[in-house]
Length: 372
Image 1 (cartoon, rainbow, N blue to C red):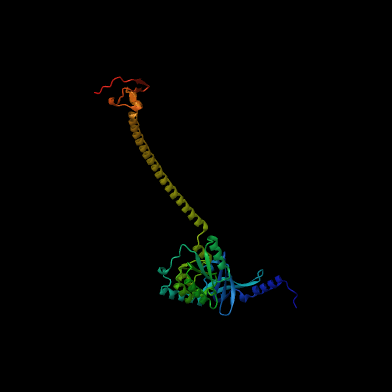
Image 2 (spheres, rainbow, N blue to C red):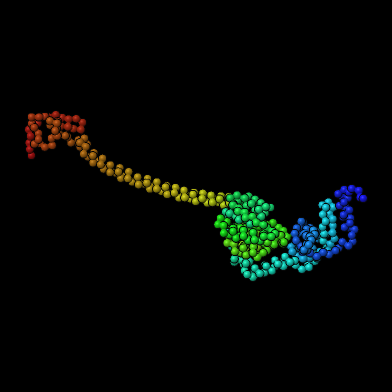
């Protein structure tokens, strides 16, 4: 009976078994590729058939440049047990195409069928609106996708409304739920644009988005629709049917929102334009007011001068009628008994006459009256 082993001893023992087994070196394995993930110059993926799945890793970059989801391949390599992580993987040294996997063939057939019917035609694409208030999102209610979309939208524009329509994104019934969600949001008046989104995955994981039912629902949608399914390298049927394809859900959110700094810039430019127009208006009105003031002053001066002239004439007339002014010219005023005497016939001999000059008067006694 073996003594108790440490984890390291156990793991190294397993690794030695795989390393020592010559029959497992440089063997060939046939299967379908899915779950491709790249990190720098290394690619990780899985290989499957109807009954089993193995994990694979390839460190030779030229081998996996053209590796595609769903491809059927023959891998040459050896099993390797990673002691530190406790994982068994198949280290790939050669990749040969065996043909294309069933899912990929179905994808190509569906793509060709729908393309011939015109579902991908550019002239049937709807324009994405510029002023968006509400975005409808068809995705899982859990996971990073909805969080990424909301955080990007609200960071760039907090006024955006987001209506989430939760659906299954893979597995049985997923295509029915996705198609129904698109149909319902298409008829929901407040929605301005729709995003159909999910994270990346294998071709099998994304299979619901390659179905005819979902494709036709997207094509029939009356609202502009953006497809944001998978990662940048993933393509699905609805990418071709949708009005716009975004490489990721976050990218879709960015496409539909404007940054606050941009909106602030527009507002500031509008303010500057308003200020210029206001200054122009005030300058014009000031000029008109100045001209009006000058016209009023000229009119007032004219009226005053006319009145001064008329007053001068009146004053001259009054001066001419002033008795004192007449007396100053050598005339005298004659009164008798307090009444002006301007006719010799009115003189009474028995009463004295007052002969008034400008600087005094003379009292005289009439002795004789002659009427000529």
